[in-house]
Image (cartoon, rainbow, N blue to C red; front, side, top):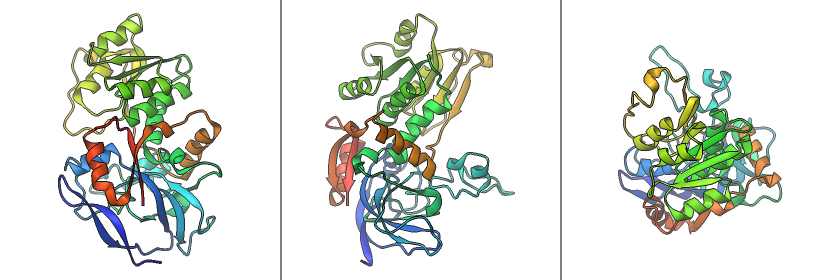
Length: 358
């Protein structure tokens, strides 16, 4: 077992660097996983740009697929050499938030307040998985065995974007026969499109302008794709719904423009399901909000995590009901991760997701 490993760390705004770090020590409830495939998320780009604060020297990344290398003394039900995934969100399973059913917000309430996003630890509050090894906390709550016959790239989207995108459709309460608009067809939006279809939506409208993403949206179940570079998306969605508006609008980019447009296309009593990571305050227009009297719902979702969530998502993959392998458009070894960040952050070459292989 090596004593050190290569890891991609946050070295300050605009800089992700590959460095040597010690291989983590394994505590009683932990598991050390040798990472076989991981990827870069849009949230990692927010970190890179200094838009989301993390400690300098922290290993980035929260989407691991790998093999159990070492188990903590109290971990039961797993074995070394087993292929596993761990969600981007790694709940303890015992906090107030977990016991209220919101594992993503795993954090303890105190007299001094409550810290949201507490379940997101990889690459946020502890070292993440863009490295040769990652330490998975609370392993019995978070490790999910990969079914035989599924390749790394088939399950690579499960830890984050599949769980997040599907979560947007679930939180939005999509029902059989619904009409759903998904604003932005990046990786999260594409998974929201697929999730809305699986939830029973009979009309799914994607909003995008990048040709490769528009085509990917059609492949994942969008019935219509509006090119917002050519026409006003609100007017287009209204036209496609004969003026009724949509039952659910899923916002998957994190900008004022897409949030506002999502609100404007809702039918009375419709739901805006927000998945975006916002970098500044949002404004809610009075007319779009119907002065607060439109019976609208606005809901937010942080990627659901934990081993049961991962098991369910991998069951969807194994069933053949959705195939997310086409989202992997580029592949890099770990030693070229700075190049991968440059490509992904600047959205060149039709990139959707990159696979990183230590």
